[in-house]
Image (cartoon, rainbow, N blue to C red):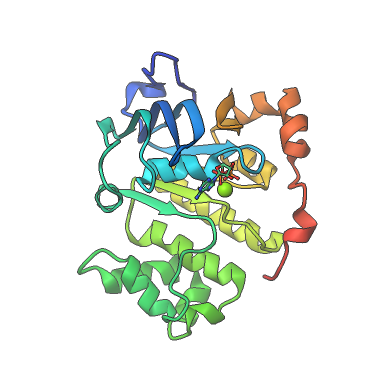
Length: 261
Ligand SMILES: Nc1ncnc2c1ncn2[C@@H]1O[C@H](COP(=O)(O)OP(=O)(O)O)[C@@H](O)[C@H]1O
Ligand SMILES: [Mg+2]
């Protein structure tokens, strides 16, 4: 898939379909602190876009700006062609956007079933539980268990279940593999591929660079709040950026990140 973000902000997706997401010259940050500057980025209507970059580059800030947790101080955020720069978070999520933030946003004191009910669209709770159990059978076996007592990998599956039960058009995933053993990470990335096959658009951030490159059709590299690279995974692999910022495809501290399965 070819996608080009041009500097006049007119993004062109292959096939001419309206992109799921477009950032035009976006500046964003926290209070007085500007983190992102002049960001042009496109996620086509379907397929996977990877967002890479060193710690502190602004990846999570970018996802928060898309979901509406942060508002851009300059530029515009467009979802399916509509400028949502000033639209609040809950209205963006009703409009088919699902943000799975870093750090497993689940209700730890509630059961798996109760968490899935919270994720579900109103009136579609039973369907949500069924769908989540299909995608992640282990969750189906543990519907009555308190979410905080699940393993880290199972908690991440529960967080990611939101992307299946709400039937979103665009999913933002922030560091799903953080702290997890490689075998669990494989499962999570396989499930992301299932979402892609269903025609969902994904914007995926992860420290396991090679896994992101294997999954993505297009990749952006952020560094110090700016886009340093935009192109195909193959194109990135052949640049010196790959070595310089991304350690040649291995999470730099991968061995230290494994806390459990
Ligand atoms: N809540 C916050 N308040 C102020 N600065 C923040 C906040 N969260 C992140 N930052 C700063 O924004 C920059 C980008 O952070 P972040 O988007 O989390 O990077 P990444 O996800 O790429 O590691 C960092 O310099 C970080 O310190
Ligand atoms: Mg982050």
